[in-house]
Amino acid sequence: MAAPTETLFREDAYLSTAEGEVVGLNDRGGILLDRTNFYATSGGQPGDTGFFERPDGSRIAIAGTITGETKNEIIHVPAPGQALPAVGETLVLHIDWARRYRLMRMHTACHLLSVVCPFPITGAAVGEDDSRVDLDLPDAGVTKEGVTEELMKLVNANHPVFTRWITEEELNANPGLVKSKNVRPPVGAGRIRLVCIGENAVIDSQPCGGTHVSETQEVGEIHIGKIEKKGRENRRFRIRFGAMPAN
Ligand SMILES: [Zn+2]
Image (cartoon, rainbow, N blue to C red; front, side, top):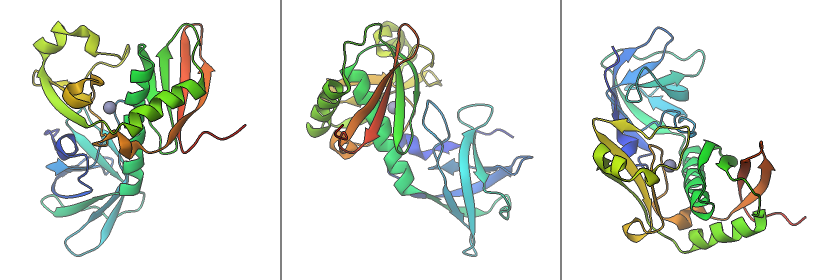
């Protein structure tokens, strides 16, 4: 039990379908595969939903994806009442791509916010319509209009977004890479995945295990819906899709 799942989404976030073989079912009906394109809830990004297609053409609706004992053990949670596959069965794994793509756009927008407001991140939650990022920002000398304008400059500049792997030694030599105060970067087998923005990562690079779009323009139009005060030194930013509503 608990064999690591090959995580296809780490190398290709755009893999909306893939094939995987059932290697186990846990005692709560969770499906374990040898490989998956389904992202599991982690780092503030919700896990994927979608369906698995069985060899006979029938479908298993997947209500969520979570990690097990380690981040490399991925559990696909079927919706209630679904028939379960047999171990050894090969399934075609279909992500709810419209939902995932919105999450990828939003997740990338959260990185852009951390460029515009370069303060330690104390929390984040990526959503389909609304994301929040909590920043350790003592004085709210920032406005939602001003931050929105800077965000849209980065979106419109269409910077490339890519990943690269570094060693733990390189990370330890560059502690400034880690912007998150409470979340440890995804470390595994001595290497860390960096998400980079801009040619040669000139705009940003930070450890992250989530899924992102490949060019900032794909984020599309976004705005800061709200900046809330959360405690003396914390500001909660809410990122939303679309133009800022006139008020
Ligand atoms: Zn990320």
